Length: 275
Length: 356
Image 1 (tube, rainbow over the protein chains, first blue to last red):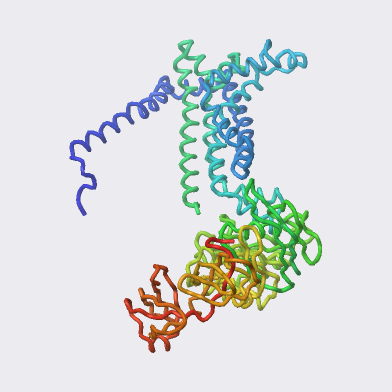
Image 2: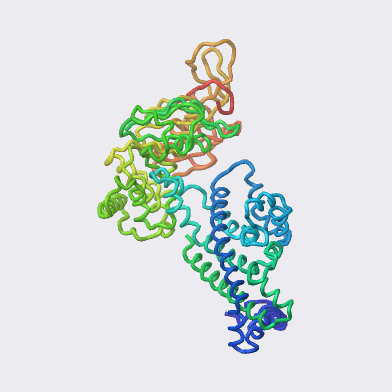
């Protein structure tokens, strides 16, 4: 075997590898390390105090609550979209297929504004809702709505193409064998997209926890009430409370790292089981 | 249980897939639905299974109208062309599926399911592969799993869509003989779709030939072979030489050929075509004979039970001829030789070149 598998001169190879490494260190590793260095600058005790002070705890709770609602909702919608778009042909199908990606194309700030316009005090449904004592904007429902909107495509994008490529053969086989709709769905359709669904859920969770733009518009920034973790980080940062901001940011970074690990595990399992 | 299809029509958009198709599969019969691809065979099979709805017409099982009955309730075993095995389930679970999804009060106990699945896997000679996933099996093995899965629910009829379509030639031969033996054993009313005439003629009790959504002929393999209903049947069954020409005054003039025509009397000349099967043609060294016409040998394939020759007539038409090995050693033709071609049997049908 030859020593080199590439035909590029050694100098070029070293230069390219060096550039890639430098970019990796500069843009990915340094910021990651910086977050933790800043978070723990005043010691572990200060970090603990910063993440357990009431506002931070409420922000964390709110963030987890929003994700706990938005992710299952989108897992359900994503599966429904995948099933409808992947297994059936109907007029307007390609339009719906395009619309699934809309939240990716629209700036999150615009998405947030849309919800304010629809549900705000002077908005389209605002007066009607206000009359019934329902608060959407500047409250939990608005934050959940905005998060659901922004994270909608994650599950659908993973599940739709897979369901499309798998076709309806197995569902038909199950039907002829006497299986009803739910039996077929839970025994055949769902297991066939299990890993794609999980992958989508992981990405969806990461985005739901980290979403800033859309939530920023609808939340109203009421500290200890409607501030999610990313908004809390920003609020502290604006007040020059850097240590606290970074401590909270380190929590988000933990979520990000956990997401990466989960993503790696899911995609490896998916590859191992791929037929 | 018998299957009866009465004047079923089905179109997809502007494409008419089935046009007033009727057929009957008697109790315990094995019938082949034969025809070129796009002829509507699979649509008909799917309509019988309840996976597709006919635009018009009805489907009857054992004399009972089942047209509006859901696929789940038809008790039909269906073997899909690409098997459609459940990819996440083991071979065992695939076969057990139909039993496991039965309503609680009809579902057999676990031990009974294990016994039945084991029995079926032995029937298809795969009991040693129960733990494998479908992706770990060969094509022929998947085919047999699909069959075992279809049989597990004790269907009243068995429908097979191109059951050997995606297998290689040797496996296909083995499997179709095996299917015939299996059918003789279990005597389940069966209808299978194929585009391979050899397969249909070898395996089936009866063959229904379908072309462009219509039944062209329905009969035993011998019927189709000896009494083809028209030029399409002859052409589709293969290995036929076609001579175009006309009929006039009780004789057909077909290129180099002239034969008596016993069809209905008519005025003037009508376009017609003559069909001679490759084994219904004799060759002779005697170029001066009264019958037939001369042609040059182009190619000789002497390996096999019969010898296949390709000849070229003076007007450039290619002829396919099969002769016995004895005849071959008598005349010993080789490429370049000029021989006399004597068709022993020419079927004449009115109509010009092209189908219909």
